[in-house]
Image (cartoon, rainbow, N blue to C red; front, side, top):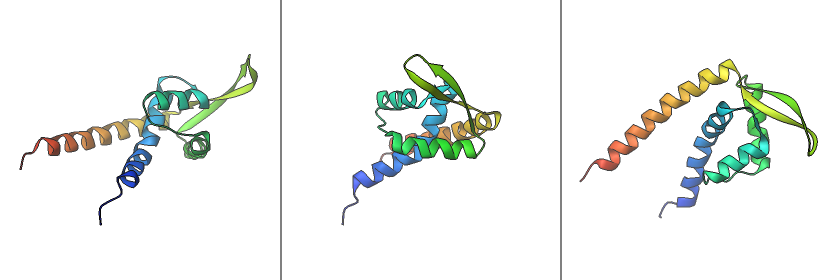
Length: 112
């Protein structure tokens, strides 16, 4: 029975989502809609219902903090930023990503 490629692609996206979110937030404090926009621009589609629980988990894990900022377009907005622990964690993920990327690249180059 063939493997369902949609399932595999979904698992791959889930595996890199946290890393991508941390990369986005590492650039500057970010509001949820800004994170979603940047993910969409990179062709990684995520809805708010997926993002909020993940951001809460990262915050509860000490990787993110947030601050409220006034908005001219409505109520105050919660802007997320990396903590020192979050920066260290992201550095570890960078190393892991580089290893995985090198491995996949090397395997793709092998000819049978």
